Image (tube, rainbow, N blue to C red):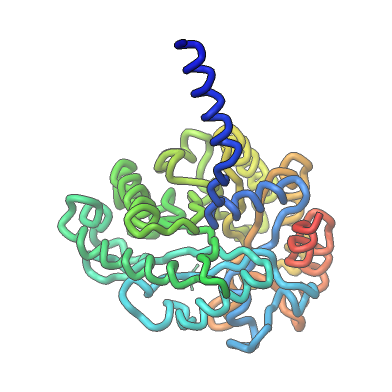
Length: 364
Ligand code: BMA
């Protein structure tokens, strides 16, 4: 009798598992699947603020410096949230959040992937990210004197992320890269301005609040120190834990032509890729560039050398160069600049993927 009962119970469970529909993948899971599908085929090329402005234009519909130089849009588009947390209408680089929302949605509809950085103003005293005169992190984590003010800031971020919806009302996926470059000490969340423990609490709270309390299931979380790490342990000093990161990356700019930057970056990419593989995460070169492209052959002579080793190009999800703001600095080329042929040649390498390559891969 017992045997019959057990057999029927097993049969019932099996029947049930065959008939009940699979839970639908969340937008974040779908983006992770896309990135895993692309891995090994191409490294997606990204550019910060690409669709909002360029070296000689501002908010011109459908414009892009990457497209103007290389004939296609970038596959990854970066955006910056700084200022959103204090209710500003425009971010700290003057891009209005209404425009950003519309452009990010349009980018998604075209097939591109959006990623967001956040140079947040402090919830303690309102100073910008680069002001390190006072301690902030210990005061905004749970139990801190300004935690509630920080939660209000996160509410603004959550509201914005929740407003990124496609034409069917579904949340669009995005890569969120909070509290980046913490290994240096230039931001108030950097190495000298908080303990690794408090930093981790900040990261964990940020992710849990957005994901769980606010129910945002469209966030792929990226852990993104600066390039000043020398080992896996060093890289992991501020790591919040596997539950709180889907992607491992780092930021590293090429500012010294004397320095053997391509090899040093390749080494760091290998460290991060190895770790990402071990943990079942994605790997990215989250920010890079040569300021104002003083080296007009930087793309083929420096960046390509860091990316093209087979073990790197086959395992890196994307590389993103920083913004093209003529008032401050630019990191991608533009048609009238001497670096344009070099940038184009770099983006024609088979392993570098622009939007068209990403879209074509979805149909294969
Ligand atoms: C920095 C610079 C700043 C900018 C900030 C946020 O690296 O480009 O001018 O305000 O990023 O985008």
